[in-house]
Image (tube, rainbow over all chains, first blue to last red; front, top):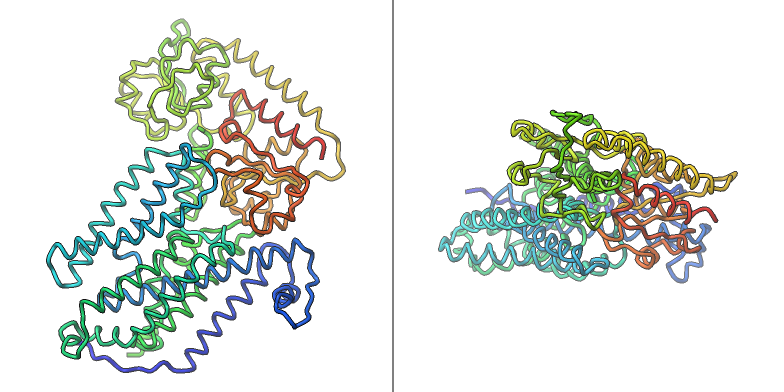
Length: 346
Length: 291
């Protein structure tokens, strides 16, 4: 039985998290392929704050770059990164499985299939821009998790392991259909792939507004359950004796984390790595309590993804690198360093 | 479709690996195994839309028994459900072809083992590749003279269109859009060379180092580069149009949008390297010579 240390969230860590978010915002706004100096870029942002009386010295087109392209992209990166890291942390807690990530219960496969269906259908006649893609991704992700849940329950097992195995089966099945559809409609393969690989390249305020309510609701619910996650971490039976309704709590947390995942996937496709690495890194350096992991996952997950996106759009500027490549390329070595230093200390 | 899909696959590879993908180089066109000058093929099968266009343009159309599902031009081509992307040697053999034109070499060896002559015609990187492939097809089908004549005709038509390009001190900037995530084509690509000959300055060239001719740009870069003209080669794949471009965040200030120089193109015409390159070049020059 793992001993749970009731670690409190140290203010220094909270400040560091907020600092990371601020750094991500400032860098995200001031650095980019368009040569706009940092001063005027921030000035433009402040010119939208009433009563300050600040006026932007940039041209209209440059102002549009700052407020219509960079700012929504940074904010979307923060929200998506936060939701994925938070969902990953919650799954890891609920299933007491260090390999759990936001796509564990089939959300990625479900969203991928639904998006492929929509892209194939619209490419073969309906035409037009695809406002259906976010909706399809959202419903696909939730539908797959629901299927996993139903299958897991019908299999009879009450252990989380049954649910995990059901997730594996559902994901494999949905991916098979998705791959078949994709091969049948190769003309649309690029659109499908660019979605599957995840993107913030087409981020705008629309997506930010779309995802914001889900961010708020899921954050409130999951953060409210941070102590329960600590209790669950002791073990299910022990949690039961401590007065936690294990099955009900698990359902609530899984449903909320899945909602966060689905909303993130809807606006940005499948961005890997954030949801598994960020919570682990926090667990290693800041403490193993979910009272620490959940709030810090939100802050550092958001900052990490926004900064990864900054790298994606600047390293080979004006060309872009897929965001998933950056998160893994930067995240994996970083995580190894964290792992080595913290393990070495023990 | 053909070129576009090969480009697509290459881009997918480039994306997935985060690395460079060679675009249709490497496999130099294979020579037909049984190029018997006296005995010309009478049951030709084409799995490449561009090769189909070339066959019909040099007068080999009557020898063609089947073409792949994307070979939609000319309309009299005998379209089938055959796939050029994931070709099935058994299905191909079922048509008892005596010559198969392929976009890549995935099934080339298998067809050779079945005793079926085939010719691999990868996406052209230059106009010279187009001329070369027309001659290859001409030689393989018994229409060498027609292929030579067609090449001369394409060359002279392109030259007369190029003559319409005004002399300018500053070349107008151009953004060629391959899809709605800002994939573009730089001057090293087939399309990029046409844009260059039309006297345009390609904004994708600054991103060349990071890609194999088809870099992914960003909205910010396109807005900043402020292209004088935008060509949409993603009207069919991705439903883009003059109005969808104008509605994008930040694009309302772009010169091409302000001055109505966003030009929708047919994806297929814009992605093939066959004889209709003349029409494509004419469309590019017509849209830009007043700039």
